[in-house]
Amino acid sequence: MKVLAINGSARKNGNTAILINTVFEELHKAGIETEMVQLSGTIIEPCKACWACGGRKNCVHGKDLFQEIFEKMTQADGIILGSPVYTANISANMQAFLERASVVTDMNRGENLLQHKVGAAVTAARRGGALTTLDAMYHFFMLQNMFVAGSSYWAFGYGQMPGDVQNDEEGLDTMRNLGRNMTYLLKALEERRNGS
Image (cartoon, rainbow, N blue to C red):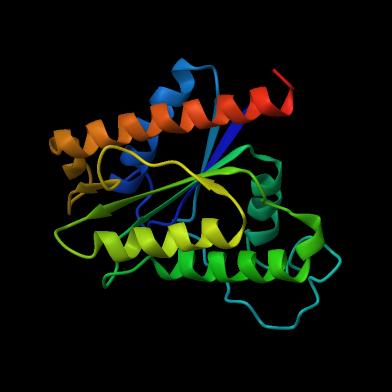
C-alpha cells in the first residue's frame, strides 16, 4: 500500500511538511509506503476549462508538475492533502491543483480515477482559518467518492515560523491519531478487496 501526500505550502519542509511527516510516522509503523510531493518552488497553473482531458484520464497541459502528480494520485491507495492557512483558505497552488484534478475526474466520470481511496487533510495555522482550509481539501475528497479518515480533533497544528508546530503537542497527537486511523481504514479496505 502507498500513501501520497501533496504539500501545498510555499515553504519546503516547513510546518505543513512536519505535520504530514508526523502522520507518515504512524503509516510507516504499519509498513505503508509514503511519498510527499512539495509544491514549493513550483507554480501549478489554473484550469484552462478546455475540457480536453475528457477520455484522457489526465490534464493535457504539461508545462507544470500537474500531470505527474495526478498520475501518482491515481496509483496511490491513500492521499494526504496539506496546506498552510493563506487568508483563511488553502494556498493558491493547492487551489489550482484541486480545481484541475476535479475537472479531470469530472470529465472522466466513468473511470472512477480516485474512487474508494482514503483521504486525509492537514493544515498549519498561525491562529485562525484552519477549519475553512481543511474544509476546502475535504470537499475535494467527497466529490471524488473517497473515504475520509478523521482524528480525535481537527487536523491542524499551530505555528507561524518554520518548526513552530513542533511546540504544539496536541496538534502532533492529533496527527499521530490521524495516521493510526488512516492505517486502520487502508487495511480494512485492503481486506475487503481481498475478500478476507
